[in-house]
Image 1: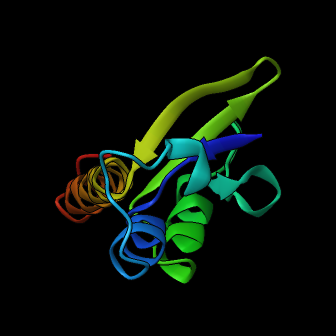
Image 2 (image 1 turned 180 degrees about the horizontal axis):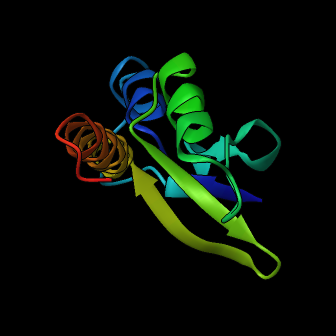
Length: 100
């Protein structure tokens, strides 16, 4: 089964091999499922960020009990981390100022 066609696959399997985008089937260039990097809804944001960074990918499928339930982008992950850090900074500022 094939699920995702990342940009590097397109470059390697279409452009470098001299194929035509119009005549090549998506299934011919997609990453195989056993090579696909995924997360679950329970995966921690920092773990998803690590997987994406280590594998140089910008999108990662979220797989649940019934198959793919979503897609997370590196932008989604960065926003979540920044938001978490901002909240922590606000808590620390409130603590320093005696707000706790």
